[in-house]
Length: 440
Ligand code: AMP
Ligand code: GLY
Image (cartoon, rainbow, N blue to C red; front, side, top):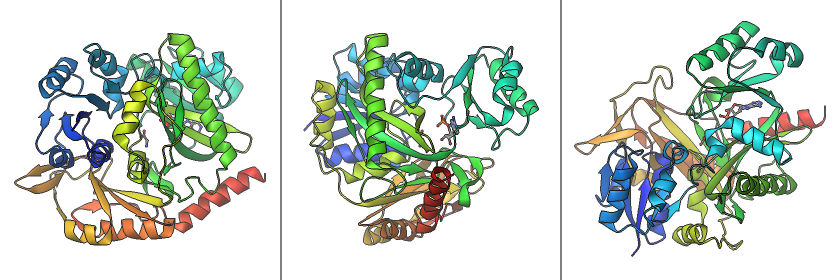
């Protein structure tokens, strides 16, 4: 049996761990906060310690004779966890520090796409101070912009005019706030369209796409309320979206392949690991909204459970640079609904007990993944972040959504979720939105 280590502690890591175990791994977990699901899957082979303390991670790998490590979250990737571990001849799934800049620096990504003439780039300008912002706004117009701090912000740093910023004063204040935090930022053209996530496996040269997913960032139904880490996501049985064509996916994959080649040309480094493309289909063309150097959360829950292929073998193929097109996914739809503590994200109720009826979940066929909860005396309690993801898988979206909803009912506590995610009503709204843009 192979000893495989997962680094990270959320629902994404829980589903990665599950996929590794289902593919025959003897799992070990290194996490800054104890995930009860990973603790169980690892049968107690865990270490609770900072995920950015590379020396401790390397020592743990040596002690447990780890065959390879999978890095879940972005924070350790952008500061070089892969380089630190590989120095000790321990293989790792994840990009090295230079390649992880695709997520770590929005300035790097826009520059790279521009320099290597890769389509789908968005017009943007970088600033290190507030100087020049007003004259740039005079040219492009306040209402046509998005402000993005350069580095990682946990999905909460991007502010869009009309959604978070409503006047020039708002824009300038936000730019000033970013500068005061010593970060450069970009002002980017605001695009209109439907977003989708294309997660890929990358071995340095080959890029294998996984089923498309759509995430929901807003806290409340009908895409209202504050931005969150993501309230849920769905994928369709044909692995597309009704408003995204096969050709769109082909184009998106080409953009990703060209980006990998550009990373190599620019830095000399092969991109290896998972690469998440956040795309938007607009009336005119496909736009690259962001890259993430890891799987998505919640999107990992939509794709990994659909794998027909052995996930441990896929990881070895990433390491060895011989990924092939034979990786396959079940032709099923998925709906993931996140349960979050009441009040999340602004004023979440923490330390509230959650009761999970695992037997009923099992009978319904719903899967569950722990995000940010803790276990004490065999009871599960909330923290200030999303608590757990409930996943429905079925032959079509409607059935997958019903399973997820039924699954949600098996969890008792002061929690809320978005009932509309994965419903045909919300899907139709997306289709109508895309059609209205295309027919303008
Ligand atoms: P990011 O963290 O880059 O994914 O941005 C968070 C969210 O902001 C995205 O999922 C989009 O909904 C929105 N966003 C980011 N960039 C743009 C853009 N250029 N135009 C319109 N919306 C954007
Ligand atoms: N679902 C968004 C992310 O993983 O960043």
